[in-house]
Length: 259
Image (cartoon, rainbow, N blue to C red; front, top):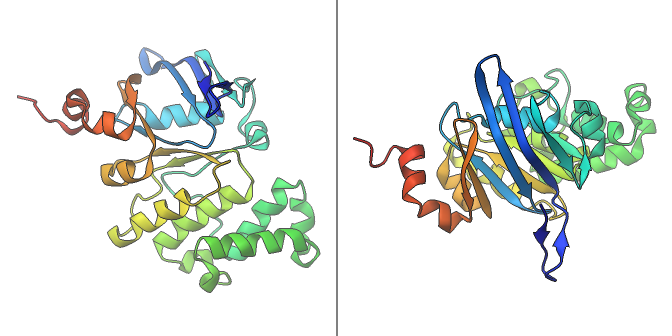
Protein backbone atom coordinates (compact mmCIF):
# COMPACT_ATOMS: atom_id res chain seq x y z
CA UNK A 1 0.00 0.00 0.00
CA UNK A 2 1.34 3.45 -0.97
CA UNK A 3 0.14 6.88 0.01
CA UNK A 4 -0.16 9.84 -2.37
CA UNK A 5 2.26 12.66 -1.72
CA UNK A 6 1.72 16.37 -2.37
CA UNK A 7 2.59 15.86 -6.05
CA UNK A 8 -0.07 13.16 -6.39
CA UNK A 9 2.53 10.45 -6.90
CA UNK A 10 2.60 7.31 -4.78
CA UNK A 11 5.00 7.51 -1.86
CA UNK A 12 6.46 4.69 0.22
CA UNK A 13 5.10 4.62 3.78
CA UNK A 14 7.60 5.23 6.55
CA UNK A 15 6.17 2.24 8.41
CA UNK A 16 3.86 -0.44 7.10
CA UNK A 17 2.29 -3.67 8.31
CA UNK A 18 0.44 -6.23 6.23
CA UNK A 19 -1.87 -8.85 7.73
CA UNK A 20 -0.04 -8.76 11.06
CA UNK A 21 -1.16 -11.48 13.48
CA UNK A 22 0.19 -12.40 16.92
CA UNK A 23 -1.19 -15.36 18.84
CA UNK A 24 -0.30 -16.42 22.36
CA UNK A 25 -1.70 -19.92 22.45
CA UNK A 26 -5.43 -19.52 21.89
CA UNK A 27 -5.35 -15.75 22.45
CA UNK A 28 -5.23 -13.55 19.37
CA UNK A 29 -3.52 -10.35 20.59
CA UNK A 30 -3.04 -8.81 17.13
CA UNK A 31 -5.57 -9.72 14.48
CA UNK A 32 -4.79 -9.06 10.79
CA UNK A 33 -3.49 -5.51 11.31
CA UNK A 34 -2.65 -3.65 8.11
CA UNK A 35 -1.30 -0.11 8.48
CA UNK A 36 0.47 2.38 6.25
CA UNK A 37 1.94 5.35 8.13
CA UNK A 38 3.15 8.18 5.95
CA UNK A 39 6.59 9.74 6.27
CA UNK A 40 6.47 12.69 8.64
CA UNK A 41 3.07 11.74 10.07
CA UNK A 42 1.95 12.34 13.63
CA UNK A 43 -0.09 9.16 13.95
CA UNK A 44 -1.89 7.97 17.09
CA UNK A 45 -2.92 4.44 18.05
CA UNK A 46 -5.83 4.41 20.47
CA UNK A 47 -8.19 1.83 21.89
CA UNK A 48 -9.57 0.44 25.15
CA UNK A 49 -7.40 -1.55 27.55
CA UNK A 50 -6.55 -4.92 26.05
CA UNK A 51 -6.88 -3.64 22.47
CA UNK A 52 -3.37 -4.85 21.62
CA UNK A 53 -1.60 -1.49 21.29
CA UNK A 54 1.60 -2.37 23.16
CA UNK A 55 1.68 -5.80 21.50
CA UNK A 56 1.59 -4.04 18.15
CA UNK A 57 4.47 -1.75 19.18
CA UNK A 58 6.46 -4.82 20.26
CA UNK A 59 5.83 -6.39 16.85
CA UNK A 60 6.94 -3.20 15.09
CA UNK A 61 10.19 -3.04 17.05
CA UNK A 62 10.99 -6.78 16.86
CA UNK A 63 10.55 -7.53 20.57
CA UNK A 64 7.87 -10.00 19.46
CA UNK A 65 7.82 -12.07 16.28
CA UNK A 66 4.51 -12.18 14.40
CA UNK A 67 2.59 -15.41 13.91
CA UNK A 68 1.73 -14.17 10.43
CA UNK A 69 2.21 -11.00 8.42
CA UNK A 70 5.00 -8.55 7.68
CA UNK A 71 6.52 -5.29 8.89
CA UNK A 72 8.26 -2.90 6.50
CA UNK A 73 10.35 0.18 7.25
CA UNK A 74 10.68 2.64 4.34
CA UNK A 75 9.58 -0.13 1.99
CA UNK A 76 12.13 -2.68 3.26
CA UNK A 77 10.88 -5.85 4.91
CA UNK A 78 12.23 -5.98 8.48
CA UNK A 79 9.99 -8.77 9.78
CA UNK A 80 12.89 -11.12 10.52
CA UNK A 81 15.25 -8.50 11.94
CA UNK A 82 16.10 -8.25 15.65
CA UNK A 83 15.25 -5.14 17.70
CA UNK A 84 18.88 -4.02 17.46
CA UNK A 85 18.91 -4.44 13.68
CA UNK A 86 15.65 -2.51 13.34
CA UNK A 87 17.02 0.27 15.53
CA UNK A 88 19.98 0.58 13.19
CA UNK A 89 17.51 0.83 10.29
CA UNK A 90 15.90 3.84 11.97
CA UNK A 91 13.16 2.78 14.38
CA UNK A 92 13.25 3.94 18.01
CA UNK A 93 10.79 3.71 20.89
CA UNK A 94 10.05 4.83 24.40
CA UNK A 95 8.33 2.69 27.02
CA UNK A 96 5.40 3.06 29.42
CA UNK A 97 8.01 2.79 32.22
CA UNK A 98 11.31 4.66 31.81
CA UNK A 99 14.31 2.62 30.71
CA UNK A 100 17.08 4.97 31.87
CA UNK A 101 20.44 4.62 33.64
CA UNK A 102 19.59 6.26 36.96
CA UNK A 103 23.22 6.75 38.05
CA UNK A 104 24.16 8.70 34.92
CA UNK A 105 23.49 12.35 34.10
CA UNK A 106 21.31 13.51 31.21
CA UNK A 107 24.41 14.70 29.35
CA UNK A 108 26.10 11.32 29.74
CA UNK A 109 22.92 9.44 28.82
CA UNK A 110 22.19 11.36 25.62
CA UNK A 111 25.86 11.45 24.61
CA UNK A 112 26.03 7.67 24.90
CA UNK A 113 22.99 7.31 22.64
CA UNK A 114 24.42 9.75 20.11
CA UNK A 115 27.77 7.92 20.11
CA UNK A 116 26.04 4.55 19.72
CA UNK A 117 24.18 5.86 16.66
CA UNK A 118 27.59 6.44 15.07
CA UNK A 119 28.94 3.08 16.21
CA UNK A 120 31.27 4.78 18.70
CA UNK A 121 29.72 3.89 22.07
CA UNK A 122 32.87 2.05 23.14
CA UNK A 123 35.01 5.10 22.44
CA UNK A 124 32.63 7.31 24.46
CA UNK A 125 32.57 4.87 27.36
CA UNK A 126 36.35 5.13 27.71
CA UNK A 127 36.47 8.91 27.50
CA UNK A 128 33.65 11.31 26.67
CA UNK A 129 36.12 14.11 26.00
CA UNK A 130 37.28 12.30 22.86
CA UNK A 131 33.72 12.09 21.53
CA UNK A 132 33.23 15.81 20.91
CA UNK A 133 30.65 15.45 18.12
CA UNK A 134 28.36 13.30 20.28
CA UNK A 135 28.72 15.62 23.28
CA UNK A 136 27.79 18.61 21.12
CA UNK A 137 24.76 16.79 19.70
CA UNK A 138 23.70 15.79 23.20
CA UNK A 139 23.95 19.40 24.36
CA UNK A 140 21.78 20.58 21.47
CA UNK A 141 19.14 17.94 22.22
CA UNK A 142 19.10 18.74 25.92
CA UNK A 143 18.50 22.39 25.01
CA UNK A 144 15.65 21.44 22.64
CA UNK A 145 14.01 19.35 25.37
CA UNK A 146 14.45 21.98 28.09
CA UNK A 147 16.93 19.89 30.09
CA UNK A 148 20.01 22.11 30.02
CA UNK A 149 19.56 23.20 33.63
CA UNK A 150 19.66 19.57 34.84
CA UNK A 151 22.20 18.18 32.36
CA UNK A 152 24.71 17.37 35.12
CA UNK A 153 22.17 16.07 37.66
CA UNK A 154 21.86 12.34 38.29
CA UNK A 155 18.84 10.94 36.46
CA UNK A 156 17.53 9.40 39.68
CA UNK A 157 17.14 12.92 41.11
CA UNK A 158 15.12 14.32 38.21
CA UNK A 159 11.37 14.97 38.46
CA UNK A 160 9.40 12.33 36.60
CA UNK A 161 8.35 14.69 33.82
CA UNK A 162 12.01 15.51 33.15
CA UNK A 163 12.81 11.79 33.02
CA UNK A 164 10.11 11.30 30.38
CA UNK A 165 11.56 14.13 28.31
CA UNK A 166 15.04 12.65 28.72
CA UNK A 167 13.88 9.27 27.46
CA UNK A 168 12.51 10.89 24.30
CA UNK A 169 15.76 12.85 23.87
CA UNK A 170 17.70 9.58 24.14
CA UNK A 171 15.52 8.07 21.42
CA UNK A 172 16.00 11.08 19.14
CA UNK A 173 19.78 10.97 19.71
CA UNK A 174 19.78 7.62 17.90
CA UNK A 175 18.68 9.53 14.76
CA UNK A 176 15.51 7.53 14.04
CA UNK A 177 13.28 7.93 11.01
CA UNK A 178 10.36 6.48 13.01
CA UNK A 179 9.75 7.21 16.71
CA UNK A 180 7.25 5.07 18.65
CA UNK A 181 6.00 6.67 21.87
CA UNK A 182 4.22 4.33 24.29
CA UNK A 183 2.23 6.61 26.63
CA UNK A 184 4.96 9.26 26.99
CA UNK A 185 2.83 11.37 29.34
CA UNK A 186 1.85 8.51 31.68
CA UNK A 187 2.38 9.49 35.31
CA UNK A 188 3.38 13.05 34.39
CA UNK A 189 1.68 15.97 36.20
CA UNK A 190 -1.12 17.56 34.19
CA UNK A 191 0.69 20.87 33.66
CA UNK A 192 3.66 19.06 32.04
CA UNK A 193 1.78 16.67 29.75
CA UNK A 194 1.11 19.13 26.95
CA UNK A 195 4.71 20.40 27.18
CA UNK A 196 5.99 16.91 26.37
CA UNK A 197 3.77 16.55 23.31
CA UNK A 198 4.52 20.10 22.15
CA UNK A 199 8.25 19.31 22.16
CA UNK A 200 7.63 16.08 20.24
CA UNK A 201 5.43 17.94 17.75
CA UNK A 202 8.31 20.37 17.11
CA UNK A 203 10.60 17.57 15.94
CA UNK A 204 11.68 17.73 12.28
CA UNK A 205 9.06 16.37 9.89
CA UNK A 206 11.48 13.75 8.60
CA UNK A 207 10.87 11.98 11.93
CA UNK A 208 7.62 10.02 11.73
CA UNK A 209 5.95 9.78 15.15
CA UNK A 210 3.55 7.03 16.24
CA UNK A 211 1.87 7.72 19.58
CA UNK A 212 0.01 5.46 22.00
CA UNK A 213 -1.85 7.59 24.51
CA UNK A 214 -5.02 7.33 26.63
CA UNK A 215 -5.44 11.09 27.14
CA UNK A 216 -7.75 11.96 24.26
CA UNK A 217 -7.16 15.71 24.62
CA UNK A 218 -3.48 15.05 23.97
CA UNK A 219 -4.25 12.72 21.07
CA UNK A 220 -6.60 15.18 19.38
CA UNK A 221 -4.17 18.08 19.82
CA UNK A 222 -1.18 16.09 18.54
CA UNK A 223 -2.20 13.63 15.83
CA UNK A 224 -2.98 14.25 12.19
CA UNK A 225 -4.31 10.70 11.78
CA UNK A 226 -5.66 8.13 14.24
CA UNK A 227 -6.03 4.35 14.12
CA UNK A 228 -8.49 2.78 16.56
CA UNK A 229 -7.71 -0.77 17.73
CA UNK A 230 -10.33 -3.01 19.33
CA UNK A 231 -9.65 -6.62 20.36
CA UNK A 232 -6.36 -6.61 18.47
CA UNK A 233 -7.87 -5.51 15.15
CA UNK A 234 -8.17 -2.20 13.32
CA UNK A 235 -11.65 -0.91 14.11
CA UNK A 236 -11.36 2.25 12.03
CA UNK A 237 -8.88 4.89 10.90
CA UNK A 238 -9.23 8.54 9.97
CA UNK A 239 -8.45 12.15 10.65
CA UNK A 240 -8.95 13.70 14.07
CA UNK A 241 -12.25 15.22 12.90
CA UNK A 242 -13.48 11.89 11.55
CA UNK A 243 -12.55 9.92 14.66
CA UNK A 244 -13.89 12.48 17.15
CA UNK A 245 -17.22 12.56 15.30
CA UNK A 246 -17.55 8.77 14.95
CA UNK A 247 -20.32 7.51 17.28
CA UNK A 248 -19.02 3.92 17.10
CA UNK A 249 -15.61 5.05 18.32
CA UNK A 250 -17.23 6.88 21.23
CA UNK A 251 -19.20 3.75 22.03
CA UNK A 252 -16.30 1.26 22.02
CA UNK A 253 -13.66 3.58 23.41
CA UNK A 254 -15.52 5.92 25.72
CA UNK A 255 -18.48 3.70 26.59
CA UNK A 256 -21.04 6.17 25.26
CA UNK A 257 -24.36 4.73 24.27
CA UNK A 258 -23.91 1.51 26.29
CA UNK A 259 -26.94 0.26 28.19
